[in-house]
Image (cartoon, rainbow, N blue to C red; front, side, top):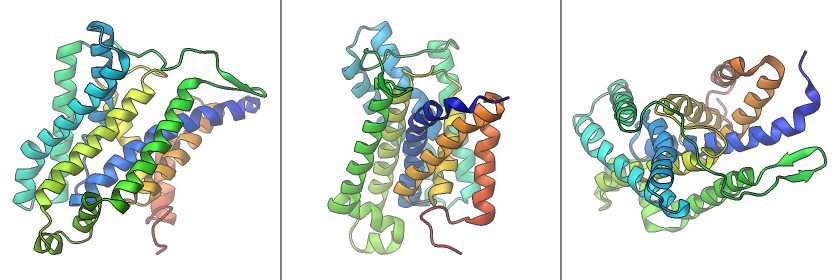
Amino acid sequence: MADWSYIPQVLVSGLGIGCVYGLIGIGFCVIYNASGIVNFAQGAFVMLGGMITHVLFARNGVPLPLAALVAVAAVAALGVAIERVVVRPLWNRKATMFVMILATLAAQIVVERLTLIAVGDQPKTLPVFTDRPPLMIGPVAIGYQLIWIVGGSLAIVAALAAFFGLTRTGKAMRACSINREAAALQGIPVSRMLALAFALSAALGAIAGILITPTQYTAFNVGVPFAISGFIAAIVGGFGRPFGAFLGGLLLGLLQALAIVGFGAGLKNVAALSVLLLFLFIRPSGILGAAK
């Protein structure tokens, strides 16, 4: 029988993984808003963020903050490369969404296999950013890495809101999401906005991977589960709505944590897919979408 006395602690843990799902979901939304493309290589960006940071820090002695910055920059560059090599030719030929999804899935698999060849199949991890005993609030222990995850995620969400609402580049990307043809007629470089969307999405995935790796391992094959969870978060929040995707990630993380307590870790993905089906049946437009 499940021991529900641990619910407060479980919810705290679910909040941390939910923030990571939310960042991944935002990555899906950024690309979808700029191009109408669903990028299932998003999970590879999460995996590479933690993996590159580990390689630089553990194998090459690079200080952890610098290793993290280099990893984010490298993954952002990879995002642009995938856009140029894989997505752009199909986009120019007006390929269907199904073809785009298959192409990004193929890119995900290629990145996974290359990572396997380069670093092997053994799990990798990172040290916590602040090595101190957890804060105690009553019976609930709050680790400093959780504070990094939640605080970093909220800061990124706020920065993205400012970027899209206040900067010319952000407004141009929003214009592309509304009507690419009209945006092009206004002199907005649509192709450049698409490349920027992939770079920004990849950077978000890398940051999510760096934040979560100290609390759980990373390996060449963790990308797909993260991509699926981020996609569900985006759907639950209202696909194309970044803040909604973040809320969807929080909801998904909390429900998965409760499912682990109630039914065991083996059924947490069943809980995630159940949430997806529930929203598709009852509110397909998501939390922040207009009700049908």
